Image (tube, rainbow, N blue to C red; front, side, top):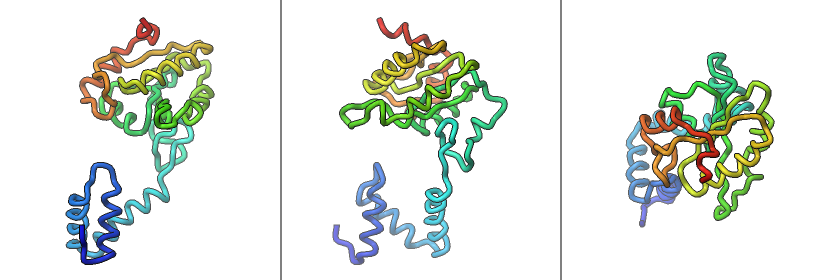
Length: 203
């Protein structure tokens, strides 16, 4: 793609680096920004700079937050006895949208995937273990129905066996191969409500 300006080309390349955006779409978006008022474009870019500079990870669950502790962990109305373990913040948002879960979360930071070079030591597994205390009754393993999700489920189940907690997984209303962020709210909500003991999946 031949562009008449090196600045335009750099902007298009930056936009095209985002997932799902090709060069043509990137060019269309950049040209749209060019036609906006300078103050609007500056405000647009400042939003991303502010996000990088001020966004935090909750020191309790590792969800995104504007503060040291996120709004879920600081909410006294949430149940302390149940921890839902998810891959990343997108899964927290997906489950919260169902309005079916009132416990706490633990964002693992990914799933075990040897192909991608991600092992247990790359995830927040030790941090999860440290959160288990006398009030913890149930750990929900809420990963997508993928090979990597199942591998992570099994590894965590083995790690959690030494603790006196119930380990459950989502009911398989989520289709095999699907990630939670793509599941519709009704299906995901039912999968949470109808979660099953992990042992039942080992047949």
